[in-house]
Length: 203
Image (cartoon, rainbow, N blue to C red):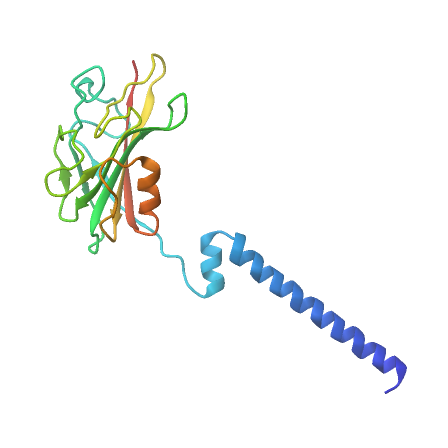
């Protein structure tokens, strides 16, 4: 083979190798660092979005003030909550109530999980016990107590309080009295749908 031809073939081979390496690096990058939808598309699967549920309360309208009764200035009882729109294959529900406006960062007021799948409503004034009738379990809030701890912000601007409800594809193997980090870690991979209700309170 003439020298010029050999040089041309060598150059083409090197270019092909470089392109292959670049493609391999791009695929590796997307597999490790791309957002989940991009990773799913690369793998040939569509990302499955979570469904949305509607959460309501007789005591609290969306964006409105908490009644005193449900706060630390009143009886500090948990409000009635109801929901709809859960997927048919839901196996249980979990609930988190938090205050993202707390001075020290998000403050957790209530943790409940293994709410039976047939449940559509929580009544007012649930007992502050590790286990609830029907099998649901309650965790330890950031006051250090089991069950519900109502809004109790420092004097000043109103804080927002989010009831975050999750429909799950399983019941959770989590002991009563667990904290938020344990609950969130256990929720991973089991959320079918979610919904929220936000109320406000100021002192």
